[in-house]
Length: 387
Figure 1 (cartoon, rainbow, N blue to C red):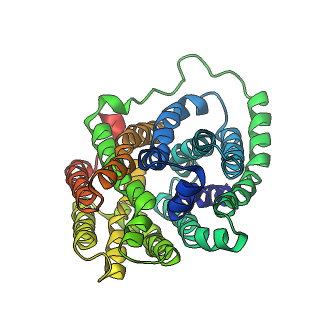
Figure 2 (figure 1 turned 60 degrees about the vertical axis):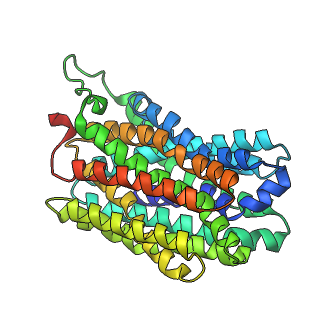
């Protein structure tokens, strides 16, 4: 189970950051306009919002292991198909297929941690978040070199399908075992069905969704456009890709440690304020001196993006049961990704209209203010089931 979770996590962002590193080449190869490029970089959040909301319904009817087999197969097929098409719209649709698999896995992993590792929530959340960050880093750093080695951006995107195919393997025996157990299982006795948890009816659920949405908005804007910002500042494509990879590489130890630190704190307020400060300084630095101190801004961005492992940990901390965790995870992530969809799209539109990065970064600072307010609301300990 743990090996399967870590392999899935490795794949959860590679499809996004490999595209971010090669966005210029893909735009040229497929003839994408700035608005179409904004749509492509927004697509992850749209897919995660739509499919994520359906995941609790799926797992009430199908074993999670079987759902993950289908999800990883969709991710594999989508990556292969989008790397072989010459049509911009087919590229969009096959990217959506790949992202559908990721959307389902996003929701399932916190539930699986709560269900199978209830006394090691921080440790296991840290492990899979670190695997996710590692996959993100490797894809961002190596997409351009792979594309250059094979003479095409298609190789830089398509190679990650092999990693997704490997992630299917541990879940096949688990899915077969789950199917066998389902056949032997007796019908649930009347009156023993678990109570449905409805986070949409709670203040905690909405605060979690706002925080998740605002931090994802900035995260996907960074993954989609940071390499372009550094290219515009005068860096070569390989160097710009490495700087993007640096954000995720520095995030690896943060992803490992953040869940344990958050789990031991009575209140999350110091973390919320510290992460906001780091992000604010990074955005201001990118606006004023993107080339002069690029490594410093990358380091501060990495610290600020620690909001992602923190909110994943908070999903487990703010629910008592596996049912509550999957409900809160689905609501916070699906609603949050609707908010996050504005990020890459608005950055792309503002960049095309103004021809610079001051307006896009101002937009990201406004989103950070919303994130901070929502973070203060989720900081104190309480449970979604109690609301």
